[in-house]
Amino acid sequence: QLQASGGGSVQAGTSLRLSCTASGRRPFVMGWFRQAPQKEREFLAGARWNPAITDYADSVKGRFTVSRDSRTNTIYLQMNNLEPEDTAVYSCAARFEWDIVRAPGGYSSWGRGTQVTVSS
Image 1 (cartoon, rainbow, N blue to C red):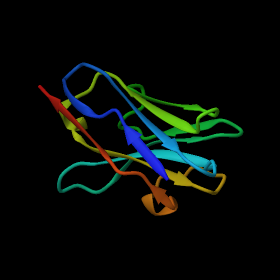
Image 2 (image 1 turned 90 degrees about the vertical axis):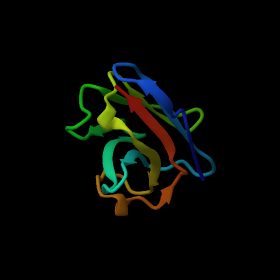
Image 3 (image 1 turned 30 degrees about the vertical axis):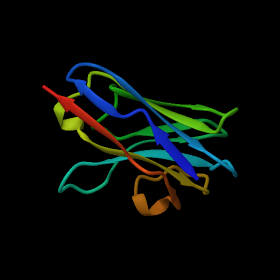
Image 4 (image 1 turned 45 degrees about the vertical axis):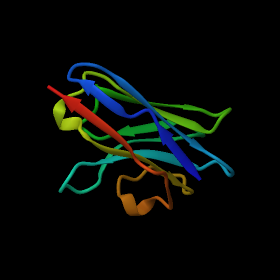
């Protein structure tokens, strides 16, 4: 099971950090996605535990950073310089294969999303 947290309502230009903890078996890869109203689910970032590898969508590269805590099976998404276009429901997902993929269908377990709202 995955549990995501950390969303909220913020002003543009500020930061938020999301976290997602996997209980039970540690996934090989965890990813962050978001979905805005009337838009498709969008891959943001993925992280593999061992060896450590990360991947970012071009839309967030340089503003968002993914990190992990192997002691707690937690993945974080640090989001800086948020923009109103970042408003969406953010979800984490788990994958039990070794490669990071961007397609939502490549992830077998999903946590409940957390809302992020950025106002101008």
